[in-house]
Amino acid sequence: MDLKELSKKPQLIELVIDDKKIVDKYGDSLTFFIYDRQPLDLYGKLSKMTDDDFENMNDVFQDLILDKDGNKIMDENNVLPLDVTMAAVTQVGERLGKL
Image (cartoon, rainbow, N blue to C red; front, side, top):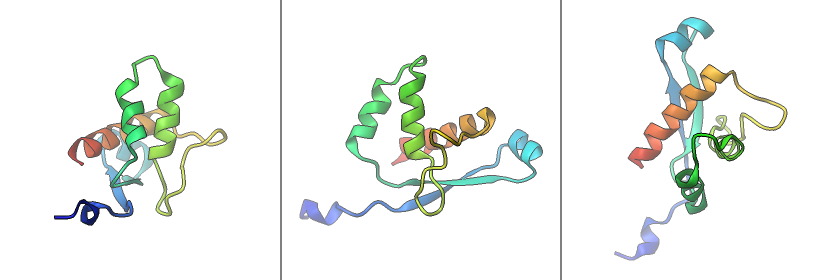
């Protein structure tokens, strides 16, 4: 097989936060999107991240947590509640571990 056959444009995939505490607090499950393929530099940033590297962590998750059109949900002006951010980070971690 030619390696080029495995190369594709990344596609958005939907992730759902349906943790009982989140649903109880916000009244419904929450959806967001990530790309099914991530650039190698993102994996490098993730592997170098430490528990106290909040600036890098924030930048990485701003790039990962997207809306249905592939736009960043969080930026310098818009942030998610901490409980939602942590739930989204958990979902992203679980999904990227399977890709």
